[in-house]
Structure formats: C-alpha cells, structure tokens
Length: 392
Ligand SMILES: *Cc1c(COP(=O)(O)O)cnc(C)c1O
Image 1 (tube, rainbow, N blue to C red):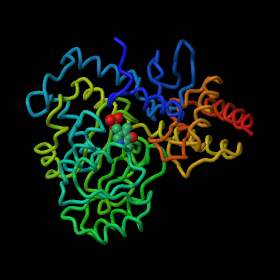
Image 2 (tube, rainbow, N blue to C red):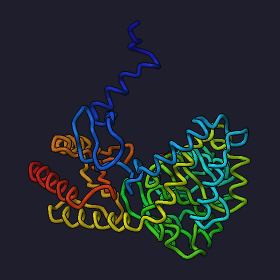
Image 3 (cartoon, rainbow, N blue to C red):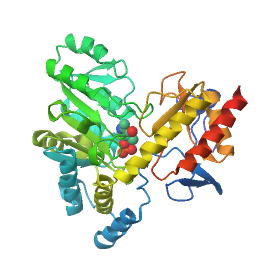
Image 4 (cartoon, rainbow, N blue to C red):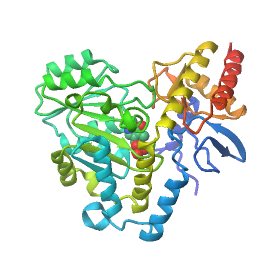
C-alpha cells in the first residue's frame, strides 16, 4: 500500500528537508570489530571516529571474560535489577567501580543515556532548578527538561554565567550539570570553579565524565580525580561504552544518593538488567584500564603529534588536550564533503552536524585511540593536508 502523502503523518516532508539541509544521517555497516581499522562495503579504512580510546573494545582478555561468563551464566539477565536480574557480576562491578571512583557506592545503569535521564528526573521536580552547560550531552539536557525543574543553560564552561543564574534562584534544590570532557569539543569543564559556586549557593554538581574515564587522571580515574576530595562533585557518571570498550554506564556517589536512585530512578527500575556477561567483561576491562598507563602515554603522544601536525597545515583546532580533536568547518555541506573526501582516501571520520552541535559549527570529530600508531596519525595528517589544500 502506498504511504499517505498528506496529513499529520506526512513524514516525507521532514525527511526531504533534512536532505536539503545536508543533515541526513546514514549508518555505515561495520564488517569487522571496532579497532584501528574498519571495513565498510568491503573497503578498508583507518578508523578515526570511535570512542574506543584505549583500544579495549576488541581486547582478547575482555572478549574472553565475556565468553567465559556467558558460558557459565547464559545471556539474558532475565529481569530488572530489583526483581531477579542483579547478578554477582553486576554486584562485583559496582563494588570495583566505587573503589575506582573513591566513592561510597556505585550503581550500574543499562546505558549512559538512561543513567543521566534517570538521575536528574529522580532528584528534581518542579520546585527545583537545573543549570546546564549549553554544550552538555543530549541525555543531560533531556533529563533536565523531563524533570519538570526550572531549566537554565549557562554559557559554555563559563562559571560567571552560571553564577548570575545561581544568584537569583530561589529553587528548593539546585543541580548544576556538566560534561566532564565535552563530547563534541574535547575540552574539560572548570570543575574547581563550578564546585566552589555550588558550595556558595547550596547547589549540587553532577559531572558526566563519559570521555574522561580511562583517559585522564591517575589510573584513568577521570576528571573528578584531578581536583581535591573537597572539590569533588556529588554525582559522577561514567559510561562503559567508551574507553572501557564494553557497554553500559554507572553513577558513583554517596550511599544516600545510590539508595535514592535504586528507590526512585525510573530508568533504573523499569528496565532489564544488562547481560551479566557484559558486567563480567567490564570487570576485566576495568582491571586492564586501571593499569594501562602505557596506553594512556601512547595516546597522549598521538594527541600531541596530531595537534602539532594539524597546526602546521593551518587547520582550525579547538582547545582540547583529549583524544577528541574536532576540526570545525562551519557549513554542514562543507563538513560532509570533507568527510567524503577523506573516506575516498581511506579514512573514516564522520561529519558532526546540527542539532548535535550548534548551528554553523559543523565539524569533523577526529578521535584518537591507543590502537593507532604514530604512522597512522602521519597518514591522516597527509590526507587532511591534501583535502585542505584542495579546498583553497
Ligand atoms: C556517549 C555519551 C553518553 C551516553 O552513553 P551511552 O552509554 O552511549 O548511552 C552520555 N553522556 C556523554 C557525555 C556521552 O558522550
């Protein structure tokens, strides 16, 4: 039957518009495991767009831990955590994550999106206010909006903009929410300043460090470990799908915070627990990640090599020392064209366009991984230099 062309469900006009804006999203079907290389449509590429910063997604010991646990424990957890889905693998992972984060407790969520959504909506309602960095991840924004709290966005990484808003707030609870390392820009939130404002205005700080864990801090303990214990945020979120190379997410904090989430967080309560084997794989990956100073050091070398080379070519870099190294292009069509031209030269780097990033700031989001070699970065720089010269 032909789809209806008119009426409220005329979906094609929005799709056509997205095409016309050069914002249409397409999925590349991956034919080999996530790593240094990718194969798409039978063609091989160097992969510079995954979040597998330490190269653990296809680590043989992580895969073996997953295989062993699924042989022992099957695949499905069978139920939510509160019914009968909470296995000893989940429990041990929570204990190890609390130790890693140096907090009283940690709690697993099935995804980072669900963690952020479920934390903010459990803690806030319409008597409250949430203050978010304007470049926060979509899951933090969505949780803030859904909570019913008064919703404020402050200028990116700008403590004085936040202060103006905190000063005049009369809300019951005030929650300040920020990415740790910003997912599309790669820079670090000014935690010290944010925390001191929170203290002054009786607010709490929540940091989503999806991109910091494994990468920064001693043992990869993330951005919260870079400040003194007194300056640490009350709520720390991490995801397991990035540097950990597995899947899922966690929140770390006080006993009272974790118990509150177990009782009241709807995206924790009303969903099936992660497969136990995923928790077992994450336990192994956490062990490797904590000891992976060699990988972190190699990654730092890749980042500085990339930055030096890119500056020599005259590319516009952002103030980022993390493995996220965006090249801002501006126009959506231009970013897309550059991504396609790099693909023709054998490099997989996706063009990130609005609404993922602000209007006029479409970019190539280059990400580096410890799985890359220095020669891989050299090869990327040669390709970028050719593409940049061709554009002029
Ligand atoms: C990836 C990401 C998330 C979502 O985590 P998932 O486990 O993929 O749902 C949340 N916050 C930030 C900053 C992220 O980059």
